[in-house]
Amino acid sequence: MSIRSLFLVLWMSATAAAGPTVGVVAAPPIAAAPDSGLDPDVLARLDTADREVASNLGGALDHVLVVYESDDPFSQAQRDAARPRSIELLGRIGERARAAGDLELAARAFDARWTLSGQHDPQLAQVLTVWGERDAAAAPARALYLARRARSADPDQPRAVALDDRLSHNHRVWPGRLMILAGVVALAASVVPTLRITRIQPCETLRME
Image (cartoon, rainbow, N blue to C red; front, side):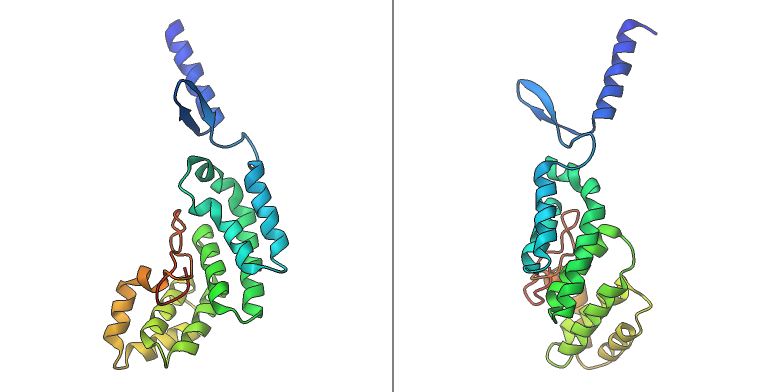
């Protein structure tokens, strides 16, 4: 192996070990994330969210989600490291919001957890189903969307299946189907479906994300 090749291999190894970096004009690149753990500012936000779970659920949710809503490379580099604690915090926020009767906030928290975990979420399905049942008479199209989303979160949720079936066979079926096709619009006002990892954008009709 030539000296030039050896230097190239060593440089590639060092770059891989250091993790993602951010280029700076006329200066060495800056590491986007520490070698281990979380940046102090990310850790501080999660600690703040942990404290606010007892008194300010909306603020707690915002503090958890900010790293996933941001486009900057530093936040993006922290997402994997922050995910386990974020998922745990989102679960607690959702549970407290549901116990307090705040279905919209509970749905936002559980939906964000579902997006981050990539696993079925029976708690989210339950909250969305109760929300859909509550609004079925006044807003059947929205309720149908909620039932369909609940079935995506947990295909075995029997009440979501029943609500979907009932609403799909009434005279509002076409508005309901249009709502399904326009799901981003439906959820944009308060739940979290795309977290820019894929943030759940707030929806005009739904106060969900």
